[in-house]
Length: 570
Image 1 (tube, helix red, strand yellow):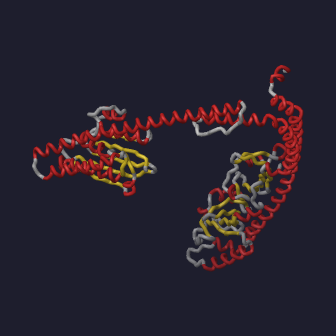
Image 2 (cartoon, helix red, strand yellow; image 1 turned 90 degrees about the vertical axis):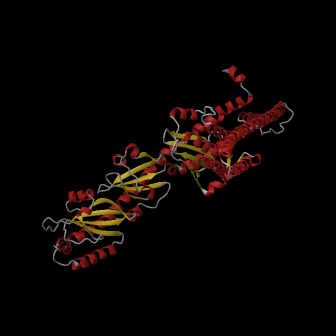
Image 3 (tube, rainbow, N blue to C red; image 1 turned 180 degrees about the vertical axis):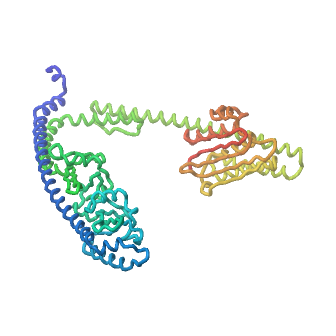
């Protein structure tokens, strides 16, 4: 151990002494006080939550008793019962409606948080108005079963959502004055805001929830939790384990929770963020940490006063090495003095300059090679087409001495005027399309009605740019490989933008390509007799735009061929 300590540098020795004599003892005292204070604050917080929930349960039960009283009043009203059970097959119901409408309106004026009073009846002669009176079938079966089990006692039936509103539903069976097999279920629908307001104001630090027996949230101080399902919480909270509380993880966030059940089986749940409980404790802990930090700072200043200059230079040189490793050679080290660190910095700066010079020279060479290869590929296409075009014109000149020969030469001249493009490789989609149309005029003179071509181009696509001679080789390939002995070859050219990609499609209904030959196309087999134009176009696109772009070939023998070109929409 002594040998190891002697081999350590001065900085390491001072840091080790600081850690043993100052830092670890102070840290141990702070952590001990932290956890002791934490346990005390948690216990006090749960005592406060218990008191709040007891008060909340009493308020909730008193509020529900008010609505139970409303149902009791309606329940014992004999006129209401007689009107609901009356047979209206052969008599008017105006008197009934006038009485009950006035009766229910008076109740809702007194209890203005009641949204609706509804009666669900098996009396089929009772008129339905869509507000007070409904058939029994319109009451959810789950609610009806709850009413039937209580047999005349009010109970919470659940929540109803209508037109974006949530209603808290209390109901009872109106069977006190029974008449035949008619059953009426009277419900009181209370606006959910009434119970939400009973739970207090919403805050980021605490939430109050009201749950039914199934764990469904009936009311919440936070609207974001109104549709949340706590199916597991109802089985945990009534027993209240571990110092009368539980910790729950909701949406990857920890909450301290406690709950209390009401007489009707509902449960009030209080959720608190641990941070809100520990806020006071943190203030005390922060003061202790501040004192500790001051001592640490004084020691650190003393330790690093002499070595700070050297470590700063080391860090700069280290950063320089990382930049070079990441390929960023533009960074330069400042003047670090005339010592050994300064000499190392000068060597690094000189090395950076040499590397940048080599990279630039190599990049320039690669650009020249790429440009030469593109020109070579271009020159492969022009003589190829010129040979074919002149062969066509020569054949027509031998067979016919009319103006078609002159027109063919004019079309060829127009084709090469656009194709040459003043030596530039890039032209607009409009010029590329005109180039194709001039080519097709020559071909239509040769083939007549045996070839039919249509063009469909989005207006906005005409202004985009492309490398020249993309479409013409594709159409030439379609005519050369797709022409049938009899019938018309239909060719469709489409140009459109799809997201950030410019798409060109050439579709024909010709002979198609056999599967084995199609595989050779896709493998880029360089065969001038089989797809010279396609391979040339594909290579030029990848050279200019990168491997992400190129051509795709789809074909079925006897059904036709579709060639798709993808370029960046520029």
